[in-house]
Amino acid sequence: MKQVLAITLLGAACTFWSSQPLRGTGFLGPLFVVLASACVAGGALRVARKEVDREDRLFLPGLLLRLGYAADDVLNAVGWESGSVVCIIVLEALHPSRPWHSGVLGVALMCYLLAVHRGESTIAVGFLRGQVRFLGLGLASLALASALATIPSAGTGGLSAGLEAVAALAALAAVALALPL
Image 1 (cartoon, helix red, strand yellow):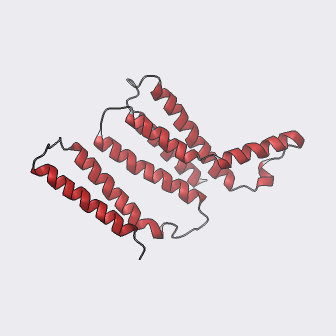
Image 2: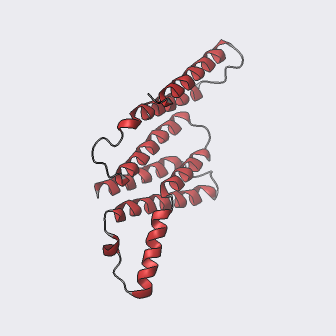
Image 3: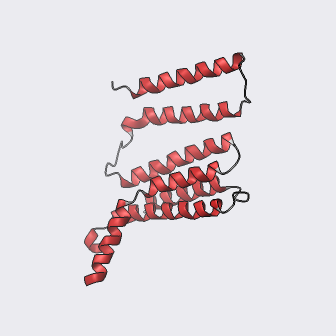
């Protein structure tokens, strides 16, 4: 149950963080807040119901039992986390450019998705052993992108060439890490 609480709190925090400030977003801001909240709740409910046997979840006979099974199948079939991440990113995109705000949101979204993955995982220990390099690279790329986005446009000067070299090195590092060993 702690995992469901963590998933819910991280999803709610990401939704709140990306929606601030809500004014100035028109009708799309509140709409995407509601959609993101519904997706976070659906994903948390799916992880919570995963821990209970299917026969124990539903106790109503006949037609209501079949409707309950159908609702349970829909709950398990929908990609709630993908929907919530898309809504949260759209909420963030409705605001003017805020590189560090977006960087913090990226880290929080990564934590949210890791919590969901952990909640759905049947492996108790070491469930991320193979992904540590990619998570580290993702965090480093996120920090680099946030830092570079704060630098004003350099035009065609020397700073621009330096930034392009750093971006090329980051791309090479990503490819090197993705190669099987």
